[in-house]
Image (cartoon, rainbow, N blue to C red):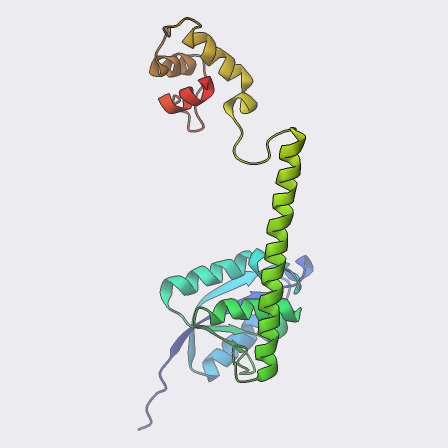
Length: 226
């Protein structure tokens, strides 16, 4: 008696390129799902999850895709090491974007297979390996360029003396009325009229409470008075 092939767990990744392809009455996602499920059945894979990026263009950065981010979280959490897509263009149309996504999966020990059986993570092709190296170098360059650009903007803003260049807003910036009342309750003498906790209680009685609806902490009051 022939032995039944062992099933291997896999997850599906689906991308639709425009809002017009999204919805129960559209067929882009249905076509991709059918192709993936058909291949999984033929190749003895069990699909245990599905991740979708709806209305995402093929050139959109891979790191900005919510569905792909959720896919990575699932892979890192449960040990599944195979991702199946309809074809390479469904993963991404732009070659560099495609290779960056594939590199992210290769680094996690994951294979990416198409519904035709092509292994997009195969490193035996020298030209594909070269493209991944170029894509990785380009990504690092763009990342470093963005960091430098943001730093330059912060430095210019700090030098202008207008606004805050970085960090959280102070209480005086968020709610000057609240800060003024806290300082009034504190008093102007050498010895405070009220403790920090007493000020928090008094502010709460006036309706001034923290984000969770509870009285401010002593440390928050201290920040207001600083």
